[in-house]
Length: 158
Image 1 (cartoon, rainbow, N blue to C red):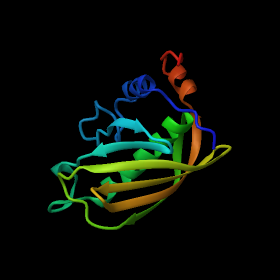
Image 2 (tube, one colour):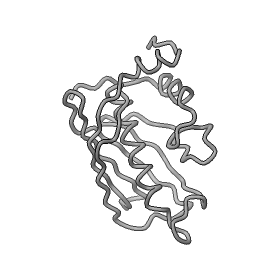
Image 3 (cartoon, rainbow, N blue to C red):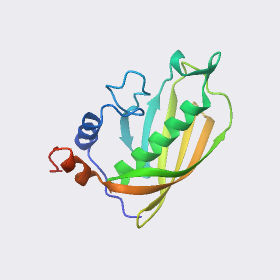
Image 4 (tube, one colour):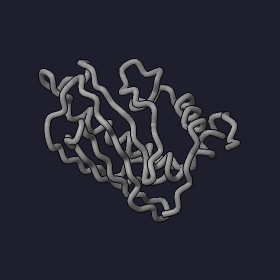
């Protein structure tokens, strides 16, 4: 797969344009607030420290919140690796162990295949050396980063 990496400035521009996103929007008061996306050779990483608002049962992160975090890091791996926005078509999740509220988790998303409008993306949520959840999904390209920023009135110069 040919990588079209996106710069840190473009990542911040996207986060500013989509600041109400539930996964990464800084201005969404009830969102996950994923931030500090780091480009890796195969995708993207970010840290996530869920607070008590994301409880499933006492002290454990709700499974739906974990699914959202895995979905979000998957989408950002497409943004960072291929400069495209994607829709989730299918997301298979495996919960491997409990994820505790207040722990800091490393989320990693990796585009494993990109063919036409389809991307296969794997994601992992881990605490230390322990994988707590992982996903594999099919994502469909919605548009390019440049086209969506242009439609929002943002400059598209790289």
